[in-house]
Figure 1 (cartoon, rainbow, N blue to C red):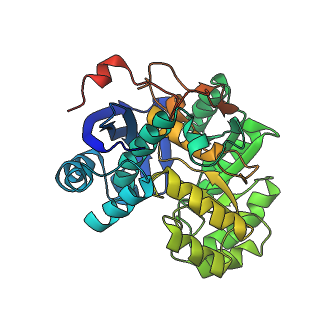
Figure 2: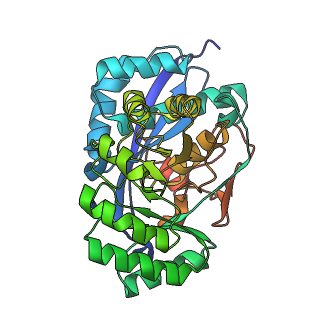
Length: 366
């Protein structure tokens, strides 16, 4: 393992979401992803690929800011550095650039992909697994009445059988949407995601109704900083998932200390890379918290990274994760899509991320 980081290249990509599956949450709609692909080339000629799946409403980052920081800050800091340990490169990114976890995650994914390809093993194995070869998944439903019905029809046509519905947009409309969603999905798994859009009073009023509708969980019901409020809501009996409350390890420790969640939704992007996501999952498990893998609308590279992280975790929540990949978009960035039938997504067994970009996108790197 004497290879060094010889080059870091980027390629901008912008894909439209399938209009029938458009996500409309408390933070606004997500109808397009202006993301950035990353390629790392080692001195041994091994290539690793990553994805900056960043949106301004989530992290204050996007493809444009990521490209700038990778070119002007991260690349000068990493070129010539040994590929291993990957954690040393991640630490150096933290010293060179404050914040911007999704940008760092894009580079980190590419580094881990190159490392696993150098070892000729799947990324999940390089991360300490694989503990499983397939992961159950769900899809978000949003919109009102006709929009919700169209989303459900599109989701079931793609094979999905587990769902969460977006709330946090106004309590009366939220409760109506949940009731309609339950009518549509029947006895299927159904969660809710408020994206921090409820006040304590709204959430306290909503949760009994959600329980009556046999909702399986409520995700991020309150402002991400209101951990004490989340702890109080847990006493109402409906499992609480922390999402926006947990970006890094320090956030996770705060949630643990405040007993503010039953389950934690980890992202490769929020965690600033696959290795750190796995480390956070181990810390959560040590404190009795289950973990699922959440989504920021990742494209195929990002979805592959999600899958390998999920496969590398000794303890993964029975709740379906959000590894939706190409299902959400009108086209795919991968030459061959992930093996997913809408119910589960499966590892390929190939080295690294186990996926290949389309030829036209490979020509875009610079």
